[in-house]
Length: 435
Length: 70
Image (cartoon, rainbow over all chains, first blue to last red; front, side):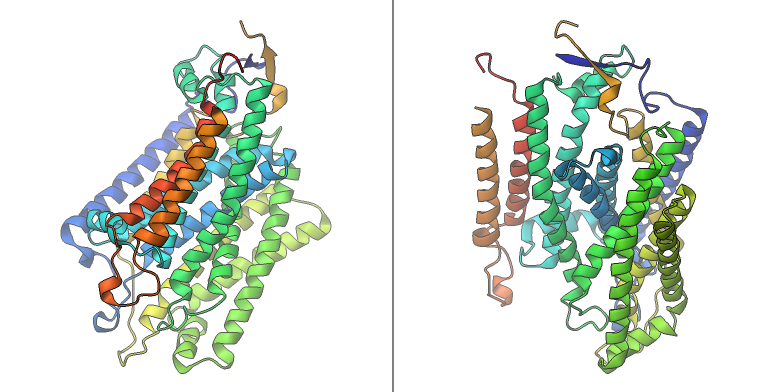
């Protein structure tokens, strides 16, 4: 048995290269090239072209913008796969249009996270080889690499691929230039009841395996900071849960933005309804409430009866060099919280306001990640060093912009090969095996 | 056959992860520098391969063609 679409042509803009899309791809490719150039400068001239310096004696920070974005990217991946897994596990049919874009977001964000780690290494090749050669599994770093970048990434990739086969089989029925590719992705999928049942079963077990894995993975990433007793501002039991929740906040926020773009550009109004956005908005609201609670608790602990150095770091956040980032991040968390709460209470959801909230919480998440990584290095010295400082150079900004553009580019390309929105059952028409 | 392959890969991947993590990696509870390297070089890579084998079971489960008598 095979399947075909009832509508002529390929759905959701697949295979249609519009002028706007080409312009977007060209701009993104140019930014990627700039990032690559900056990275090559870094490799050939050394880390001195960045703003990163040794702690204490160097008066700086060894983890800066790159590590900020490592944590941010991996955080974004959290929500993608969580949503996708929840949709499969609990059969949330009205959210199914979100599943594939959530999976794509996860895979792309994890790749970007891995790249962000590589660009932070002074000797990238040596670093990558030695990780697999000598890493201690007991180390939170290895846990992050192995669980996040191997287990979690590979599981998400498998999940994305298996979920795409059915749509690829549907589209392979259309005689287009992409037919060969769609046949290859479909890998003989015929949408028989047995195949559907197998896919349902495999998706369920994969989702069941991924959910605990991702909580462990993000907690482990939090432990990279949270277990360092010698670094005031990092050592905290709240780091792991805080990482998980903020990961959810940034990921859901970005998913809202992506869903709105897809809705506008790929003709997804029929399935990416206000109900879908309202669900995302409520999910984001709950996560924001929890995170703001964590933030208040952390601040109270850091200022009330903490050690001298701990108080120093907190003071830097509240009134010192980092205050503008801190208060801007707080505002970008609290304002969307108010907007979302108002929408939830009034039961009137505006996609525009949701997108604005999604952008705001992502900026806040980047700010918070920066504040987690940097101030504890420049001002959290237990040894008698002067307070340091860190300012990223254009190289770091260009590399990060290149990574962001790479992510956008990959998603934009993916959308032209496989529908970014899972095809609804109504768009398929079963035909006989010989059709 | 499909189930045998699937379960076989899940068990093989799980075993590889367990062995590499608990027995081939750096000794547990030993904090000295001499014990900071893995007992077997590339033990972490074996762990990662175990993860990949285990999750690939899902692909095998779905893609393995039906036998004609099934």
